[in-house]
Image 1: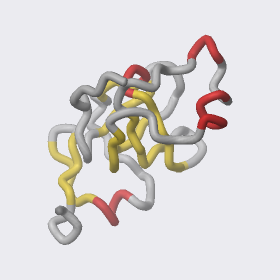
Image 2 (image 1 turned 180 degrees about the horizontal axis):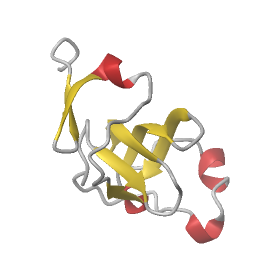
Image 3 (image 1 turned 45 degrees about the vertical axis):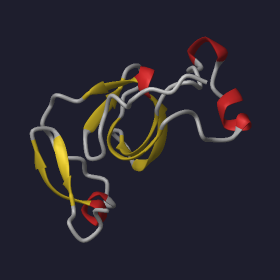
Length: 109
């Protein structure tokens, strides 16, 4: 599989290209790293390629907060400047600056 650099960074606020949710990146896999069952559960017409970065997001939509796993091809930069309300954000990140949360110094490595 072809590996390439991730377009989005840890702490960056992003939104889904098709579905109405947004989130903050808290981890990145260089290529797909989930179960085959999960990948097959995505409708074939929108199923992403495996040879791209996949992002772990603290995500939210109008109704709830959750953790999402999303391919790079399905993400866009969120330009609203609004913070993410997910309750776990404060455990990983400090302030939001120019669309990017700053990683807390006590957990940075």
